[in-house]
Image 1 (tube, helix red, strand yellow):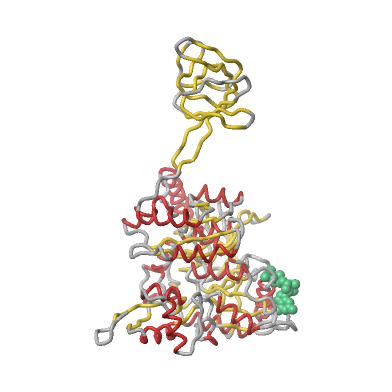
Image 2: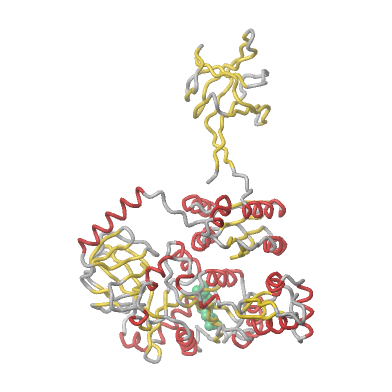
Length: 595
Ligand code: GDP
């Protein structure tokens, strides 16, 4: 604590933080912070989020000079994780940037009304109404409000949002968090908050179903506060709009709020250049062949432009807007269905327009050969390489996704982990929750360069496969101490490498021989795989392991050999073992380093 009479110590704090975080930052006991808050008439628990103004009063009371840290939501594109933003806008001359419509994603818990809200917004749009017919679902649509356009991605949910981010796309400017007024904050609401925060995307709360007799907006606002979303009424900067998707009430207010948030941020692009953007979805059309909904994020896409979409080349043959109307060009933030592609691209692929199709084909060919020779630059973080990457200045924080079997385990683990942050690397709890590790958790890990920790829980099949293919580090623990110990070791470069066992083959003992001077030899047949002289082996009888060691001899007929393959007979002697019995199985294995 700073002493009076001396120059007060300057501390930088964010616009919102928990009492615990504040205590850690200024190295003061949380009790003292809570006491100081109480002196100022604020009752707060250790986990409660407090805003900068409140924290500032406490800090001044404790003799510090508080300053507001750069707000996380004001992060510049360069601060954001994806390289796409850098490619999109970073090198643009600010004078050429013009406002573009905000791109909005709707998130929230299942059944809270995301789909209904997207429908309601679409149908209040006068222009869509005038167009008459039912508009096709193309993955995104635009509406007009007070003469200004807003783009909605109409696959709701943070899963789609994060899957796109995992592919390097950063398509959303604003997230609408739908919370049912009769149900309040639910597990997926919390997940959505974590995913939006991880992507540095500002949130607007749509408090839905206010028509319901049991709607309780005040309770939802309080619960949101506890979950780290502080609405303006509570002194935060998150707008909260009451809506009923069913009765189409409050929709105008919501659109107004979106434009307000858009105005407070630099949502701009340069329309005078070749287009770049993201594929929202791709499909095979019966008459048009491969088509894709693309969202232009910078530049203007024109009919006739060459196109590179991931590893697919093409030329814009036709282009339609979200109302099915043919268009000649698509400006920034405009979703458009394009045909003329050499294949169906994936959602989240980035695209860029080039001079013509020939150029596109050359780029794709180069890209494919570059990728084949590239040993893939790893974006994901593993505990094993954490220390080296911190030393190299590449990494300043360790983002963690924690899944546990019971809710009660989460808080003590988070408490312990947060204590491990040091000057070089900060532990950042990206998301916590209970239940199995799912694909969605792995997607968030890929998108944010995080590691996944399972406490007494496993990863399901799809999550495991995705983690393997993308080299996401999933660690499983059943003792908190072991978990924190590993993280600490990883942070200080002391983590022992992890080895994985690889089974090479299995032999079955058919008979035994006694050989003078050598001892007992097991006459075996190799049932599967191979037996290797240098491998480790374990002898199993009735499913029980009786012995584990290396081999002292491996012979085929009378020859010493290095390896014996499936179906062949051989003589095996394990080191320090003689008591073989017919029917015993000998398993051969090696250990390979993970990562
Ligand atoms: P999603 O899973 O979040 O996409 O939720 P849906 O849009 O499918 O809505 C779930 C259920 O809530 C449906 O039965 C909707 O009719 C109902 N619902 C959605 N919005 C409202 C609303 O504003 N008021 C009422 N009373 N029901 C709603």
